[in-house]
Amino acid sequence: MPDFLNYGTVIPPFPEIELINRVIILIYIATFAIQMLFWLLIYARIIFYHPASLKIRKTPVSVIICARNEEQNLRKNLPLILNQQYADFEVVVINDCSNDGTEDFLNELTREYSFLKTTTIKEDKKFRHGKKLALTIGIKSASHEWLLLTDADCRPESEYWIDRMQRNFTSGTSIVLGYGGFYTHKGLLNIIIRFDTLYIAMQYFSYALAGLPYMGVGRNLAYRKELFFNNKGFASHSHLASGDDDLFVNETATAKNTRIELRPESHTRSEPKQSWADWYYQKKRHLTTGPRYKPLIKFLLGFENLTRILFYSLFLYLAIKATWIMVILGLFIIRLTILLSFFKIMSLRLNEKHLLVPSPILDFLLPFLNIFILFSNYVEARRRRWK
Image 1 (cartoon, rainbow, N blue to C red):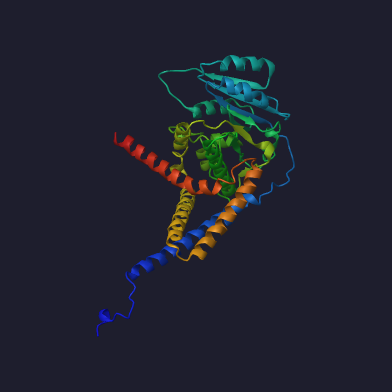
Image 2: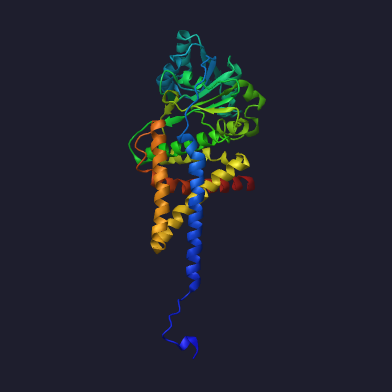
């Protein structure tokens, strides 16, 4: 009797579906394994990092600040920099075409502080420029070899900011990466901004410790003047609005010439964006530099984002299907435990509060947002080339 007439035999319909689910489970396990490699081989470096005890030699420092219509921020923050507990430093402020009271305020302070130097760039409607020109002018006018960069809207977390950063200015060091965080306010947007900042910091600090430094933030960054001129400044990306910090570090940093500084006294803090639109366009501008990173860095950052998206997406699919649920759930809990443990330590080290609870949700959502913004930037760039 033909098999299809044998009613006592149960033939599983569509057996290829079971095969597909097994393939999906294998991919899920693979993404888990890859994620563990990133967390345990790269990100763990920052968790277990302890700064070496260095002989403290007070090195002269030039603090560089660019300001365009920043009178109110300069009034709040500049005195905290001018009154740092450090013996030998100068502060160079570049007044970049301001039309508020910035120039008058700086003139007042120069009469009180002899080590404050100011340079004013006058507006020329025939010539547009960005922050990179102002920074270049400030660096050229700096008297000292070591440059410590921050922004007008940033304030040091302590009066020992310069001191803590300069403890890394050793003979073999050319770049020091510091942490620039944002103030804590109420609201979901503030949580997202601070989580994103913390995650990015965890990445660039960890990669630097792994011998692959690729970026820093201009809110708190130090490097040698010689390094700047040997690299011809920002010449290779002068046409981009962003990149004065991350692209410069990406071009010049090596495993041997870069150090990091995490001590709480070395942090700077600034006000985050207050509207979703402002933050979104700021994020778009920052992500325009990513395609210019070194190929290995682009691959690692992109691969981590891709495997994270796959891990979460496949977990949701398999959880709904209730397939191998104990295994699937077990791997998810292992990764979640590591994520929460690492973020707890990082939050304490970088003085970021109220980020632990929302971290699993934001860890899931932000890669999707980054891919969307990168795709949006790509489409806009193609349109500009077409025109």
